[in-house]
Structures are given as C-alpha cells and as structure tokens.
Amino acid sequence: MGLRTPRRPTLGALIGQLDPLTPAPVRQVAHLKLDCPPPCSWDAAHARGFIEKITAFGEDPDICAIVLHGRRLFSDVLAAKTAPDDARSVVYAAVAGSAKPVIAALSGPVTGSGLELALACAARVASPNATFSTLARSEGHLPAAETLIRLARLVEVERAANLGVFNAVWDSKAAVEYGLVDLVAARDLVHVAEKLAFSFNGGRKLTLSAEPEVVAAKIYGLRAKVRRDAPHQSAPMTLLRALEFAAQTPAKRARVEIDRLDEAFAASPEAQALTYAERGQATLSRANLPAELAHELAWPLLREAIHLLDEGATPGQIDRELQRFGFLQGPFTRSDRDGMEAVFRRQTSLANGEDWITYSPTLDLMADEGRTGGPDAPGWYRHASDGRFTFEPEVDRLLQASATFQRCARAPIVDEVIVERCLTAAINGAAHVLEARADLSPALVDAIWTTRLGFPKWRGGPLYMARTHACDPLASLERWTRVRNTAGVAAPLLRRIVAPP
Image (tube, rainbow, N blue to C red; front, top):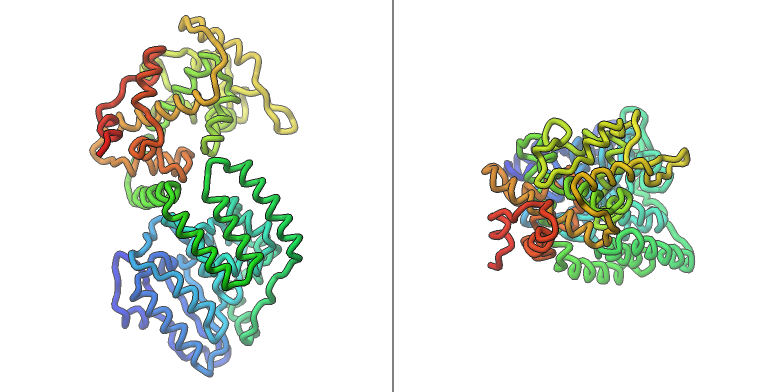
C-alpha cells in the first residue's frame, strides 16, 4: 500500500495493493503488508483507506487475527515528512480498537511514529536485527497519550523512561526481556507472526502492575537523573511527567493531563527549535552536499577551542563545558579516540598556518611530539586502565610553549567564557560559509551541525540561536576582538541574520 506523501495514489489504488480480504484458507490470518513510511506521513485519505481495511478485517468472521508488516512501516525516517493533516491518533486508535488482534512483525529500526504504531498492536514479533528507540514524537510534540499509557502497561516505569526520556536503544533481546516484544523470530519473521496471530484468539496481554509506592520511588529517582543529565532542557522532564501520569493515574485522567502537557510543551521555544531542527534534517537527507562541508563548518569552533587552551583552559574543562551545553562529545576526547587529523582538520588534512586568523602552533607541536591520538598514539589526556583519564602534564608543557610563542600569558578561564567564545566562533564561521555558497540555507547549515557535528538538536542550531537572539554573537565578537582577534570580524550576513525584523 504505497502510502507515500509525495505521490498520493487514489484510495482505490491503495486498497487494491493490499492483500485480499479473504485470508489464507488454512491459517485464517489476514496479512496487511504496507511498503510505506509510518503514519506520521499519512494524510487523511491514506489513513481512511487503512482504517477501512482494519475495520473490514475485523468484521470478517473468517479472520481471527491480522499480521501487520512492511519494510519501512515502523521506521520513522527523517525523509518521511509529517503530513499537514496529521492522522496518527485515529490510526493508532483503529489498530488498538480492532475487533481482531493486530500482530506487528518488526525488523530493522523501530522508531518514532513506527514505534507508536507497534505499541498500538496487540502483540509484537521482532527479528534479531530489530532495534527500538526514539519514542519522542516529531514536530515538537510529546508522544501520544495512548502511546504512553500502553507503554506503561507493558514495561516497568524505569525502563520505559530509559526508552522514552533518556534515548536508550534496545535490541530485540532487551525488548523481549523488558516486555515490549512478545517473541523474537530467528527466521521467517512473518511466518512466526502468523503462528502467533493464529493462536492469539483475540486475547490481550495482561497489564503490568506495580505497587504505587514503588512506582513513586522510581519516578523520584528518575526526576533526579533528569535534573542531573539535562538541566537546561524542558522536554525530558515534561515527558517524564507525562509518563508518570500514564503509570500512576487512571487512563481517562492520564489522557487529559498528557494532552495538557503536550499543548504547553508545543508552544515552548524548545519545541519550536526541535521542529526547526527536524525539518532541516529532513531537507538535509535529500540534499547532495560534500562530506568536507562539515569539517569546514566545525573548524571555527575547534580553532577557538585551541586558542582557549593557549590562554589557560584545559582540554577537560573545554570538553566538559561543551557537553554541558549539549554537545554529544567534546573535541579533545574525540581527538584521543579517533585521531587528531580526523577532528582538527580544515578540509582534507590537519589544519595548517593558513587556516588561522591568529596562528597557534599547538596542533603542530602536538604532531611533532607524536601526540596525535587514535588507537596507537598518545593524545591530550593520560588514560588509565579503568577508563578514566586525566590531563597529561606533557601537554601542559606544549601549551605553555605555544603561549610563549604567541606572547600570550596563560591564566584560568571562566567556564561560561568557553561556551560563549566557541559558540560565537561557530556562528560567525557558519555565516561566512553561508555567504560563500549559494547552494546552502541557514536551515541546511544548522542541520549539518545537529546531524553530523553533535550540536544539541533542542537548541535548533548555531544560526537559529543567533536569529532567535538566544545569544548575542555580535556583542561577543566585538568584546573579544578587542582583547585578541581569534574568531575574525563579523560576517556581513551575520549582521542581517541577527537584525530585528
């Protein structure tokens, strides 16, 4: 049933692509195979055709169950754009309320709207390669209330929070152990799902229950974890509160409270930034851009990080503050893991003297000493056998030599200055790249940052932050240029981006 948003076939064509209403004569199980993206991309006509099929199967006395499967049906890929007339809720309700149990046959990534669809089914069978992640609904919304209620009935609340709030990825083995999946099919996934459907006889899985005091204690611990791990975000705590309602209150009240939370969150600046980032990532997935563009965009931030080292910061301090800001990993930790040339390069090789506004010999000194990181060479840190790492004294000596060469006095750097200067350099560098390339847009540049460079998606992107005045790059550039010109002058385009409408 090619439910593709770009090319919308007629309803008759959609229905004609489905398996016949009459089931296999022996199995008496109907098959619904849909080679299309998940319901987030369906418009009202597509949803109506699907619901009519589910209803017809439910009314057929010769059918005892339905197997729902499809290669892309349960994977909420970025290219699957959300339809303007979002019909997800009615689709999930039709599956959950079907007169005949619907069994989901799952393989590959099961994410987003596809995971919500799987949760609406009466049972789930997975192949060994199936993974489960990204429960959060797209376009700046929480998962549907019914989705959270079903999840809370299937999975213990702490594990449900790991999946929905803390972005855990479960393989099929974990999904079975935690109660999300009923069976793993080593081979012939659809056949195993059919056997389960044939023996299901309309029964429903027992609802998971736990003592209220136990659930409350676990929720309390999860709140502390959210405050520790995501102190600047509102989405994780809002989603945890929604999950708390799903686990602790009657379904009717839970729906009302979760819908209220969703409405409030959707109007927040964070939700708007997430929506912007997701749409930009969808556009990026269809764009043909060179991989080296990511290195070009990242270099101004990395260059500023090196200057901060020269002025008195430490690799650990910079990595820590950038991760607190929301980056997935700090540049020096990554350099030790992947090698300095893989991280600190401008285009095809390690950055050289021509790539600097104010030259720093730090990278050259590190390379001359063989401290290039990677699996076979030392780097910025001293790594212990237990996995911990500390600042390497030899690196401190090299940084002092670099500062002496530049006639720069080293002194402690305030934590807030690190994020301000790195972010300002990234914004100004992005504006310069955008000026030089007619094939780019601010949304595409930000999407490269959030998709390939680890910038926090919930902040939108560097240019988005400048445009929405979440920071003041012009004032920062002016202030720090008077001290030491390391990030260059403001790009003319940047002045237009931050100018009030």
